[in-house]
Image (cartoon, rainbow, N blue to C red; front, side, top):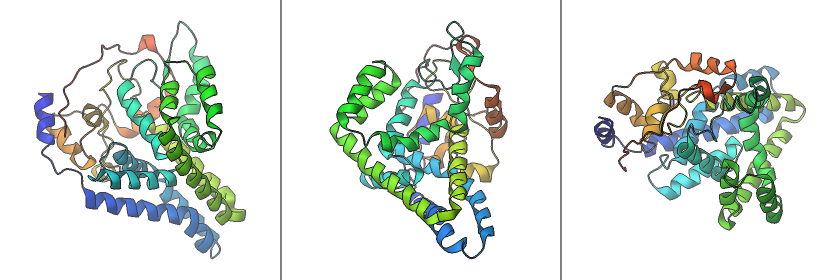
Length: 324
């Protein structure tokens, strides 16, 4: 049943190149307004223009959804164009594209494994109270903060970075696997170039805001909260070790479209090769059911970390995913 449904979806519209390029230009404009036009042209005329940051902040997760398409080579059918657009958008997002890409693709491989789950803690080794600070740090702003700081880290000498990986990261940990890739010669060059442009982007933004710099801090804090808090919403309280499982969450149709159907995350995890525009078809083809409402499920995360022993346990589920 799953295979038949996915095969039908593969005959969908394909990567919507024109729409995605228009969206990329739109978010380029949004970031230029937020970081430069607002402080240089609008705020000097009237400080009340600062309220514009509120609706711009609400576009944070749709912006990430577009970068997410590039991560899966679905932003443009030409891979070179896809990579260029992905790198440009990631720089404006605040982190090198290669860091975002590999981290996310590894998440797909290790989804809900004990080494990867955000809310997990082992009751035999620690308590909920001890696990809570790290968990809330991660979901409230830590995820985005680490991504933004990463360019500074990778500007350090390569031998320092390698020494840190060998001496301070467990050999088979997710962090060590990621670092091993990022420290390759080509990877490190790309990360450093994109990281330098990211840092320059932020320095120029702070210069543009001048005495209004608290507004920029507020905008970045809002971005950190929205990205970090909604990153794990599709996986919280889901079965351990089912690497293909994620929740499909209900959203009003206009909001789902704005989010590029990211709320249908369960369909995406079953087959990451489906472009955002075809996710509703995949949901319908599999007679999909929602595992809750988007906003209610997001708030459930505030319950805190969960012991591995209290979560449903599942052997890894093997599902055949046809190639596009």
